[in-house]
Image (cartoon, rainbow, N blue to C red; front, side, top):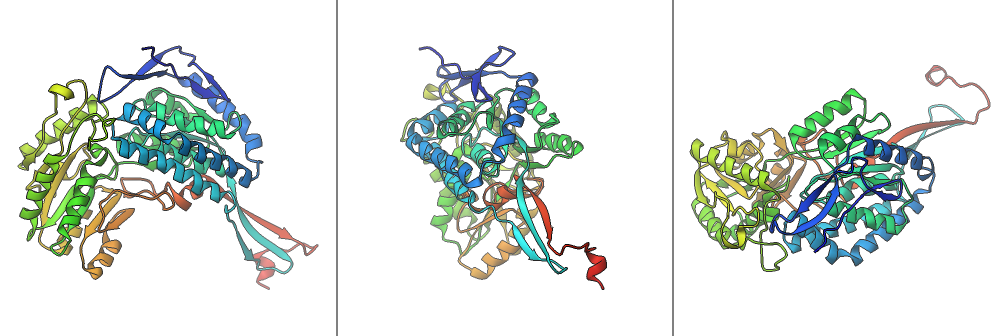
Length: 497
């Protein structure tokens, strides 16, 4: 079977990298399945893409926002028509099960339709002037050329969070997909091209972060950067952007806590724990990686969760009966192994899992089983550091206040959840949990596209994706004063008289 070669999109043309180098995209469930060959681009390719985006910005910014929005709406319809094919492509390159990749594509569809609506809502503000015969207002304007660095775990949804609000606001874009999952981003962009996005408005350059990502951040004509990935890399990106005075949106790590109190609906909490910890094979920044359970119900909860985790069917995500797919690459498997060893050395008790699956049908892929640790203490590394795999830690608490303190005692602050029937404690948790997202009686995953998405502390730098948060990042405010008095008015000087 011939391997298809995919190219960069620069200035409306699909072109090879100037380096003429490529890399292979391999199915993490079956290493003999080559998804495609992609361009291993370098700084010169980024420069060409930036030049194309800079030229396209001259006219795209003047296209009325409702007209820009119509293109996004058409792209949403195209994605809807191609949902099944794009979901299959994503499962092949990323590994997560078909139900989840359909959801990933659906999130891009939802974002397209939502942001299309923003084309008639990019609201500014009018306000009374302090002087007579003077009009005051502020309006949103596009930022300019935006560079985007996307992760591999949601390879269409997260690029849609970046591209679609930027486009409706009038910006032009260059996006670098993750090397593990370039096809899904190219599929999203192909839908935009087919919907009528003009040449140069969206550009895709594939390749390594050290080559493509670094040049995007440092390029003097790139006015803003949006990055989703690890805190380690995000710190480097943020520092480089700050030195160049570029707005930079960072969406990074999480060590998300679910609290299960003694009055919780236990079956509901178990459903949430299973989905939150092992959905996407634990490879979500919002994954439920810590579960703090009241000691009165801990034994019952742990026993039931272990039983249910061991029943999960692990395998190739293209098999509709599989409930958890592979990890995305060998490096992620090694990280899971390393943290399991650390947890055992620190005194945590391995309840199930803990070793990669390598025999039989698992031999050709990167598989790790659902893994649960009990007797975890808040200060252990397994309770503090992001694993990004199907590994969950269970801690015990003595009270609601104890649970809040445990949840907040980390460097991250992305997502949290609380299971309780007590409305008073629910509202206290909404106020006191240090996180950008809090769920009540639901796991730590399940964000919707019309709400801001992001976190506090070392999860991010204060910007948000999704909803109005994305519009805020991809626009800049201009204040406008219209003086129709036909005389000089000196603002505070004359207003104070």
